[in-house]
Image 1 (cartoon, rainbow, N blue to C red):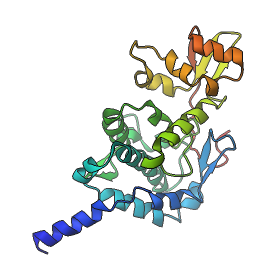
Image 2 (spheres, rainbow, N blue to C red; image 1 turned 90 degrees about the vertical axis):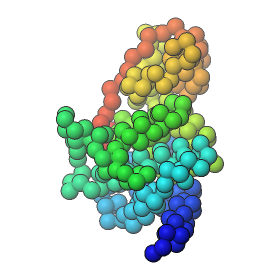
Image 3 (tube, helix red, strand yellow; image 1 turned 30 degrees about the vertical axis):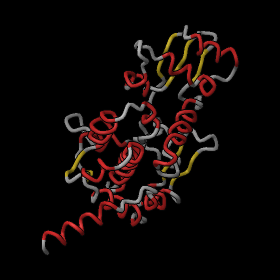
Image 4 (cartoon, rainbow, N blue to C red; image 1 turned 120 degrees about the vertical axis):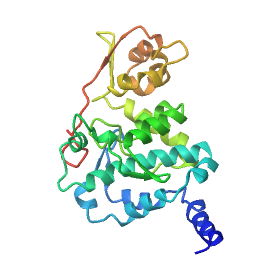
Length: 261
């Protein structure tokens, strides 16, 4: 094959990436179940194990995207792409296990955590979940809501959404995901009597992403006071910012049906 023909073929493979992420949507549809309030979801790994054609097609299309093509996309296209790559790859990793583990962390070890495992074909190399989340998403985008979008396949994690993230709907999707997550009282709540706000460990682990220009996190919770509070009194406490902050336990149980309480 001559160089011109090869270049034309490679261009056709990468330039037409589907920003509707329809192959991933087809894979999610029968396997993602979202709670009535939208705050939590499960993924039916058992059923998905024999139904991987759409997932494989999606990840193959991801692997064909070049750095040059990616750099030509809009910021919204790039961020939606990376969020979907992370979530789809985490599912792929679990489906590749002989038996479904109790936790995604069981796949790794103290010396080689699962987050460091290089198995994702991206931009011509194999990268890890950490590479995608921290080396790409957090490095390139100042967007704290990504922490309710990337899904670590755990019950304590914000819900895996039933549809992929897309550039055209990204703002609405991220905002809805954050509000749904903060509205989940099993992980985020206000204790008015103790003047305490209890939130997910996510806000502890990634605190720096949520701080304002003065180094305070309270304004972020004030922004979402209507989602985090159940009463006007709780809302007033959040808006005033005079409270103690505590963190709820994080449940690393795999987010399969019947495993999340």
